[in-house]
Amino acid sequence: QKEVEQNSGPLSVPEGAIASLNCTYSDRVSQSFFWYRQYSGKSPELIMSIYSNGDKEDGRFTAQLNKASQYVSLLIRDSQPSDSATYLCAVNGRLANFGNEKLTFGTGTRLTIIP
Amino acid sequence: DVKVTQSSRYLVKRTGEKVFLECVQDMDHENMFWYRQDPGLGLRLIYFSYDVKMKEKGDIPEGYSVSREKKERFSLILESASTNQTSMYLCATQDRGDQPQHFGDGTRLSIL
Image 1 (cartoon, rainbow over the protein chains, first blue to last red):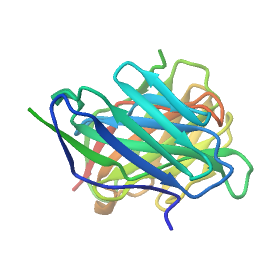
Image 2: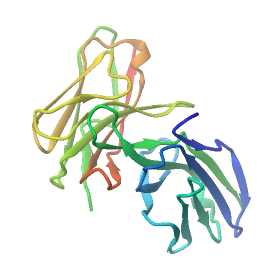
Image 3: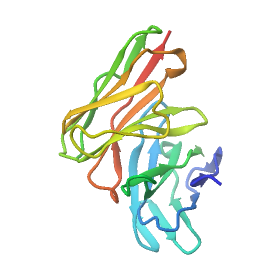
Image 4: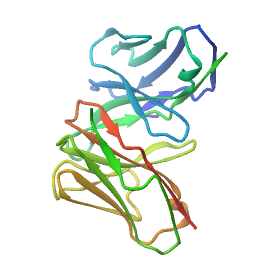
């Protein structure tokens, strides 16, 4: 089982609709969860951080965390063509040999917003 | 805002060359990371550093080394470049372990 799993997509959503991106993780002790957006040929850009169960909203973006079920999701309301990108889920966890925390990234979900 | 600067956006080198990729951050972050990203494989951690002169292997360290002589600078070295090291290389910094990582613009490296 991968440590962080995402549906690779592509996920196609009509402009103005809600895009829903999901991520599951395997490490029960994980405490920090992040969503990154990556445009083609560019580097990942942080768009959301979430640390507690429940919802966190920032503009058109809402992150949802459920630690009991070990999943985190990202909702994008009123989707725009500029939201077309790959979205990476990242989860912190322990480095086996050092006790320091590292981020583990999913392979990303490619989202296309259809005008 | 966090500023992470990678020395080159595009780089072309030949097999067998020694290649240096530089990364500089301006936020006094302790932690720095080097990843490579390939289609279908996602981000893979090469090396990381939690302090000056400290370095630790990530998931795919073979063929690479790193140097961190100053807190703000973390260098990735390809000892003898090979074609399978053609990739996008990303540097990231992090304030502490429970915080997000912040990425530079990346270096697209081609080894011919």
